[in-house]
Length: 93
Length: 482
Image (cartoon, rainbow over all chains, first blue to last red; front, side, top):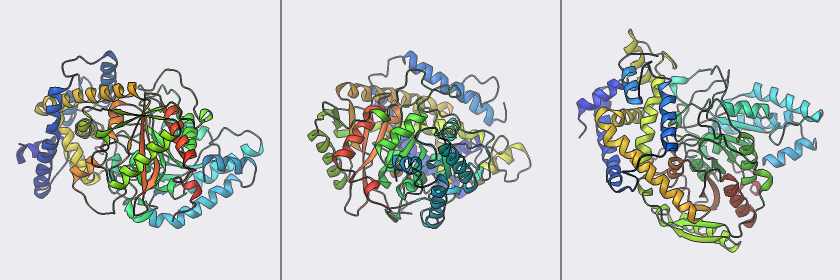
């Protein structure tokens, strides 16, 4: 369940200012999106590839994607999440 | 007119490139108020390029099939010194300091750019209505949407306001508007066309491709763009072969796979037209085989999670400090927050919030990592199906173009791309081509999905279909529709 507080925190991290009405609407939408996305969990459980390690090519593609993004993230970022949150915390490249 | 027809007229000097460009700009000025396909008309640049093309033609130095051919670019493709906005308030007035590789390639091939094509803001949408300039309309019915996100590109090609256009396809954004507007839209294999200078939405899905009147034109534009680009780290380094000269229109022995999963939810008119298209190809010697695509039902959700995660990262640079228009504020945090609050539309904000959620400490394991696993399962499922057949055939959309401002629920909107996102998840090529009309006279699109770097096979099949149906569904024989 995504609460109003969580939504507010997410908006703050994403540097998106929302008024009270927009915040309520965003919370409802995020709840619906979370329900919608939930279906992926059941698929992940049964997916044949679930326990397989990604191939070298896939790892390479993931690495390239991370590198591409990290280039625009603060220096010292080790992955997207780390870089993203450090940037949102005010750090810049 | 097709690219080949324009080429003949120019080479035989029946019309000059300048005359043609002037005529098209006049036509754009007449029609664009209603159609809104262009968000920027680049008259001066177009006339300069046309003059240069005329010189080359006069001196016998024609650069190739696209020299002097008028075209347009989706507004998320950077054009040095020419406004590129992604149809977002946050980028209004932005003049990129460099050009996208695809635009550099086309310019050196003699392309004449008439303007920038309208689109959903940052390519997020399936109707083209999420544009700060208002949505592009469908030339077949101005009360209907052009589709998204490359709606302006499809609309201007369908209305004969450009011979071809480049769009970008993250989750069907070339193929859906092409289907709605009755033109051919090709999403090439991931890595075959450079993405350098494309304002990215989700970099592991994004691909630039042509929207054209027919399959032959699509092959001509693709051949020009199908080159390795060192500026794009994901650019394919293997051998590439030209395909436009090898379109023979023969489908004998071609195995075409039909999957029940990719017909679910489609309207009656669409199922009829797509089955008829399969039947036409079968009569010409293709073999129809039934295939299964496990996990494809989850493609929309997977796309939604991974796409929004990547979008939230990509769009973090639009903070009015690095890129983007300012909207006031006293400290850096307030400056960024106000700029993004004012500059982004509601759909972009929704996807950024979703992306932030799925990349958060809790969300990453719950959503993002699971979605990546299912993406691998979907990729395996598509690649496996493509060992049993050469091409997968399906509807391009469940319905034809919907009415403007019909404000569907946003989750329902996301499902519009259900048949299309699989190709983006797997990185394989796919195209949409017209195959019929519904009871309202609106175009119906059929999708062909191929093996990696199998664009030649796809376009040959599309070309064969056009020959077999005597171009009944392409614009060439239909003339102007608005």
